[in-house]
Image (cartoon, rainbow, N blue to C red; front, side, top):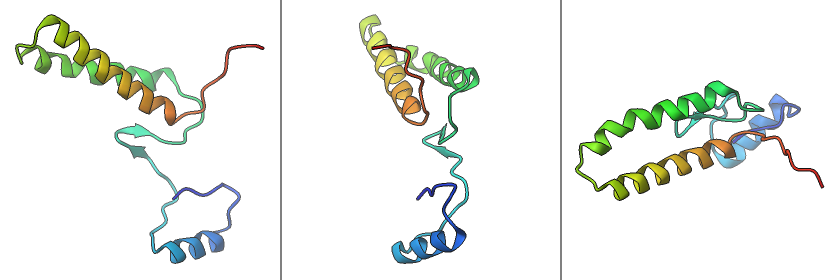
Length: 96
C-alpha cells in the first residue's frame, strides 16, 4: 500500500493494522521497473531497450520463423513499454 506524503505515521500504522499488512516507506520496483518516480528519464527507457536486446539471441536460437520472431519481439516490447508507462506521470503534448 502506498500513502500520500502528507499521511501521518499514526495514520499509516492504523491502516496497516486494519488491513493486516506491513508498511514500507518506499516501493522500489514492481516487475523490475521503478514505481512512483515522477517523470521518466532517458535511463529508464534505455534499460528497457537493453533488456529486450538481451533477450534477442535466445529467441533467435529457438528456430522461430522471421514473422514469428517479429511478432514475439513486438509483443514483448509493447507489453514492457505499456507496463513501464503506467509507472510514471507522462507529459501530455497534445493541445485542444
